[in-house]
Amino acid sequence: MKKICFWSVGDGEYAIMLQNLVHSFREVGMEEDFIAFSDRPIQGATQTIITPSFDKKFYLFKFSFLKWFINQNYDYVVFLDSDNFFVRHTPNLLELMNDTPIHTFFECDLSYPAERKTWWECPLEKYVSMMHDCGITSEKVYNINGGFFIIKREAIQLVCELAQDFWTYAAEQGFLLTDEPPLAYAAQMLCGDIEKHLLKNHFDIWATDWTAQYKDRLPDGHEWIFKDYMRYNTFVINPAIVHALKSKKALISEGSKYLKRSNGLMIKK
Image (cartoon, rainbow, N blue to C red; front, side, top):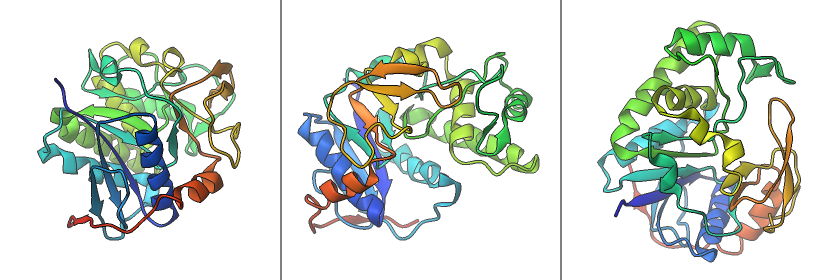
């Protein structure tokens, strides 16, 4: 049986949201290991690794923490931003990994005009061009959201190297990107069949509520309207995990109920 581990990162108020994430994870019956990187112990986590202050610029810290798993005894690691929330148990996530060492949900094909013209202040035409410059051979080039991804442990180093290479190339072109475009690059370089990883085919698993359908309240397991980030196409969905971007006040309020002091482990960075 493949061993899977979920993980997330959060300090300050994000630690309180992380506590709420882990609580929701356990409440729906998820039994897998959950590793929390935080400035305080997280109740319900298999292990809390107490971390010193870390650089949050461009959200690239995800790749630094990801490397910790290279020497751990897991086959696959599932990253979740701390503002995710479980409303029910997920389907078998390893079905997403049949043809690939990395999974992220590809959202919109950016190779033709979209409603939005930029992604992280980079013109879409330039982003597509840079992806092709760096080795993407498919005409289609996708955006992603970095709030959820799965990586096979043996591929972690390669994923981080690919992401760093793309970030560096983009910086040389004058674009200081967040974690998302480099992650999209690594995923598209390594994925077998992109169609199997399109977000629209997996709305039962996860989606981002960036349009504030659940503004300042917790997701409740009912259907809601998702709008894709680039073209504004709408879908009625009900995923097991909601990336509750606009629910931070509610996540903090709920998470504070469960956050208690306990022993953690220190990791040096």
